[in-house]
Length: 323
Picture 1 (cartoon, rainbow, N blue to C red):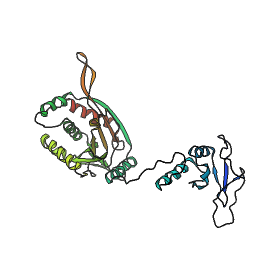
Picture 2: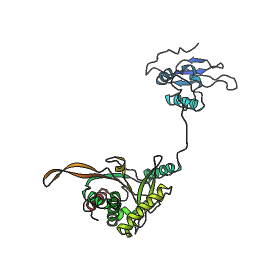
Picture 3: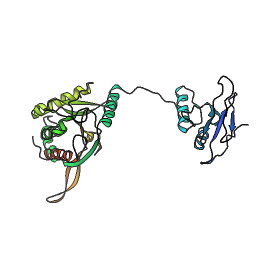
Picture 4: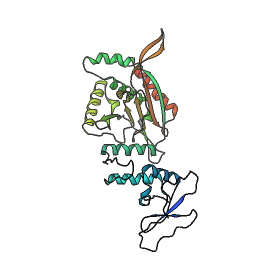
């Protein structure tokens, strides 16, 4: 007896097991009955229950006639098994079904992305992320940049990074790391500041300004530029001493976003796009250049108050910045 392909089965109706005979023709087995295998050498497959939603999916894909050819990962044939079957057919160049004609190609992720994924996965496993955010007045840095623009001097982003370094000097938890035992706190004497750098191919590497706290302003900006250029040339500089990284998401036109901690860092600071915004001033409402600062931090090393104090310190230094 053949199964009718047009058979309408409502959700909630008992699933029907299909026993495939030696010829490959589906044979119905009543619900609750036991499907027996043929005494042959394995030419026929054991009965596989097909739930109503899978039957509907098979009809949509035009695959009812080849249902017996679709391997089931579990005890039942599920829609995802159908998708896997179609994918394998597409890879093999012989797609089956009504809308399975589009093929695709598979390539290995670049090593840079694989490394970044590993670090992010470590971050999710080894830390407890929390997020704080605030707005800051960018006017002082904007004014300073107008002075340096004529001489192609210090960039506005570099000035912001300088402010972060000065704040890290006063907040030891942000130049610290938690040992693998979860009990030992290691605090570094110097600051190796990480900078996220986008490279072609939607890839991300990290530049590091080493011992940034020992540099004067001009040397800091020179090393910042040099390290970023080295990273764009293929060098990844992050190591276990890099505790804070900065992401300039504003350069891509993003106002704010929640950054991911990339180990070994314990915090990632994201600077959003600088925009003119209406704020309350001494003379009433006025427009100022403002930016949103967002930080994801490892809650195991510092609590919300310490994180808020650190971000507030950065804001104070940005708003009071001068060359």
